[in-house]
Length: 373
Image: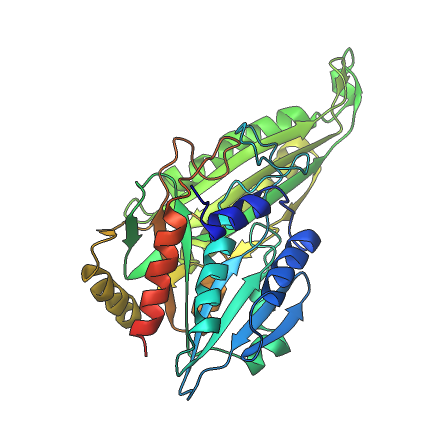
């Protein structure tokens, strides 16, 4: 049986995952593919390791935008697939290989079957970090070709293939990275009184951070403070001079994000005083919430109700982070979940989404764009 061409594209892209702003092979592969298409209506503008593709319509009245992300994650793949990552320590573990192949499928259709309106396809780098959406939307290229509406999808391994999950309003949370460095005084384990132990300080701080959500956030609101990594010390018999905490903050409102950060800063100052050390905080990449505009999302939902090839599901908001929120802050639109049926979730080394959803998604997105005419 002949393999669907966009499933084949997905497999090619799955082999070459690259981290944010390092997507050189990925960009080259995508641009090579575009070179194979009729180019009478295509206009391309590069932006760092991403790019914009404008398909000129026959009688444009508006510009419809569609965004895909193109970067991978720093994860060692463990799927055992014959087309596993060829880049050690990197993997498309968030489905961006799916997102790109779907975007190419939709783009290919409209190159050959143009509609009246202009279409703008955005191939965005660095979604996983440090964040490509905000600088991309601020770029002169985006400002020149700024669409009137925009939408995107994200695979959801927890939903079965054929499911599309969406909701009006808040879909994904505000998110921020969190890095805290503690510097004290190291020394021999036999002389603890001559040191300022940062392993002990870090341990106290982790415990205190866990009180923020339980004791400082309204129980009717939602927030997450997670410390996912701690490093400190060198060997077992030397008291650690330095320690580092790495984590994430997620909230359903911008006000809660500011409040949580204020509380973190207060706790860190207390650690400085209590353990006679120096501390610094870096919030790293911060992503704006994904907020689906009600009227456009309702229209998309109504469109889906007329299709037999998808199972529409109204989902709840999630603590997931996505920098597409910055685009939705500037341009009306929405994001939806595409069910992909994997036993392992996003960012897992064994994530294996069902490839049969690729042609289904291409048909759905293509049909919706034609519906917007």
